[in-house]
Image (cartoon, rainbow, N blue to C red; front, side):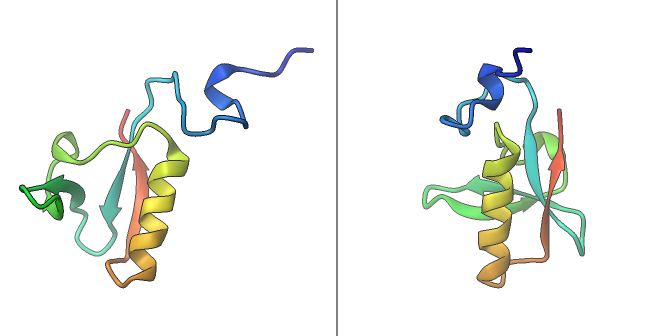
Amino acid sequence: MHFWAPEIDPAHPMDCTQAERYAVQRLDTGVYLTVGGDDQHLTEVTSSKDAYLFHTHEAALRAALELNEVGQGPLDVVKIE
């Protein structure tokens, strides 16, 4: 059986051909994070349409974990599309 698919290629996990998108959401308030301003700082937005969207779950999870480690959390990843 052939199980390999380009969207799950372990050699290139950040390359994605699927239409799925993920966002980082603050657990305590339910707001989403985006990158804003000229200095590219994190900004909270209320709509998932305004959130920064990641192309892979792994990238979104890595961002959420790193932000949790530096005290920006509690954050989690949610599937948007």
